[in-house]
Image (cartoon, rainbow, N blue to C red; front, side):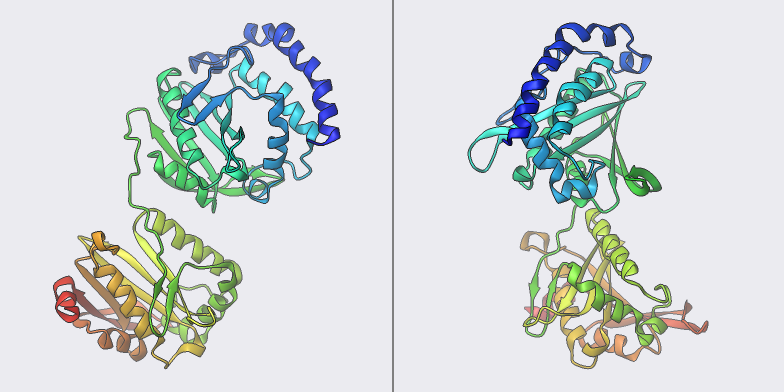
Amino acid sequence: MSARLRAALTRARVVHLTRVTIGSHEPAIVLSRVARTLHCGGMRFPDGVPTLTNGDLTLRAHRLVDAAGIVEQCRDPVSRQWTTVPLDYDDAMAVDWVTASIPARWESGAELLFAIETTHPDGSRRFGGSISLRNEGERRAEIAYGAHPAVRGRGVMTQAVNLLLDYGFGTCDLETVLWWANVGNVASRRVAWKAGFAFGGTVRRWLPQRGEYLDGWVGSLHHSDPREPRSQWLETPVIDGERVRLRAFRDTDVSRLVEAAGDQRSQYWLPEMPSPYTEQDARDFVLRCVVAAADGVGLTWAIVDPSSDILVGNIGLRAVGHGGWEIGYLAHPDARGRGVMRAACRLATRHLLTGIGDGGIGASRVSIKAAVGNTASRHVAVTNSYTECGRERSSQRLRDGSLADMVLYDLLAPEWEAMTA
């Protein structure tokens, strides 16, 4: 603990005690209708704050000793990226938050804000983050949470969210809880997904952050909803072959994605892609792939050279219903004519048609579409033993405005089993 923080805590103890013993009566007198409708608002801090426990995890009132951990969390780059925490967050701000802001929110009923206490990797038991229900009135609330960096990735926040939801739907008699996060905050979305939230899409320019309005993801959970995921979150496994490796996208892939998608030949056959194709377009594409995997409807890999890890293309899977999936792919210009996409398509096909129990998706049918004149794309399908099964006439408008037939190929699970037996 820094000398500055120690001095601030010493000064704050007097203020904190004054708020509890003297100032806590005022908020109770002026409780708004919003606080009353939450059924558990307007509590004295800290004496009236309940302690919720589930195994090693406890939700409790914040304490002055939490201030050092709060500063660590708020200065962490991940917290700064996804929350509105001030970039110059310091010891005094943490003390003020614990001794003034949090008590005021409890006593007014505006927000039920708990400290998360849990065992850290070093074996000590201390502050591990904060979680709250923000009162929206009429038995509605928004859930908000943030974890100390030392306890991330250990299931702490998932456990805390479920514990607080039990309290909110039970003791507080909530009808519905909303979840908001900046678009791209996949870790927060995964926690909400595990708790059973239904995602309602993206709200453009809705969440304020440091003078900007950012796009937000929103989800909702009703008191009667099952508290379990509503869909399968598809993981992106690393799949190694002799010629290529399939893996999740990384930031270092962006420039190569731009080159591949901005290539004249790619633009001609795939006119739905933006032109010119920018780095932001590539990042938006990667994020859409992440959301599709989170919703269980799509899975996309970066295709990379096994020795250099340089991106040579991408290949994606899209659910089309009734156990069927469609494959799409794009090669980087310098990877064409080397058998790269043929090898990647075989690996993706194998993953699709492998049973769930064996680590695959368990598809019953896989299909590929290619414009009649796109001989390279059609060659990939044919050399992977897909069968031409039809044609959609004049169904694809190309970059020059002309209409092209789309040739359909498919491969059935029994056929794959016979081929690989």
